[in-house]
Structure formats: C-alpha cells, structure tokens
Image (cartoon, rainbow, N blue to C red; front, side, top):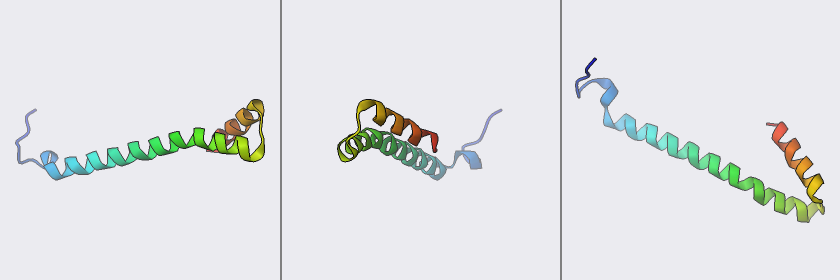
Length: 65
C-alpha cells in the first residue's frame, strides 16, 4: 500500500505535535522519577528515619498510586 505525500497521514505539523507530546511525557516522567531520591533524603533527615523504616514508607507511597 503506497501513500501519496499529500495524504492526511503525512502532514508535517502533526509530527511535531506528536514529538512535543512525547518530549513532555518523557520530561514529566523524569522529574517524577528523579524526585523520589530527593524525597527520601528529606524524609530521612526531617523525620529521623532509619533505612528500614524509610524503605517501608517509600514502598507504601508506591502502593498509593
């Protein structure tokens, strides 16, 4: 099956929208994923948690999603 360059599926502006959506999704995931270690450091110092308790708290945070 061949498509002509003028068919609706080959419009260049839609490619940029899809690329922008993918970049935004990747950036959002990276921010959320990188925020977990920083949260652990702040929780450890703020609440004076040991490693086992901190692991439990972070695991419970993961269950709430």
